[in-house]
Image (cartoon, rainbow, N blue to C red; front, side, top):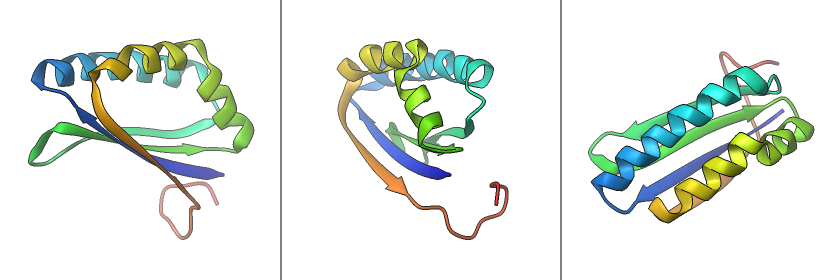
Length: 102
């Protein structure tokens, strides 16, 4: 199992609205089609209306690779990229936790 956090900084309010729409569509598909994606939590940041953070947990590397190559995810990436100023990905090694598989 491994996890990652992604921060997205959006161009403007219009981009934020579109990003949120794209995210909702993608998460619906992730729920339906990705059993190896254990957690896919999206967040807005208090006081930063143009920032979003995703927290993702995968059963293993194969589940992450399946996620990254899924048609709904590649379509999300292509559509969201023009909306961004920047993004940052940090891969995590889960340690002690509540709510994650052991």
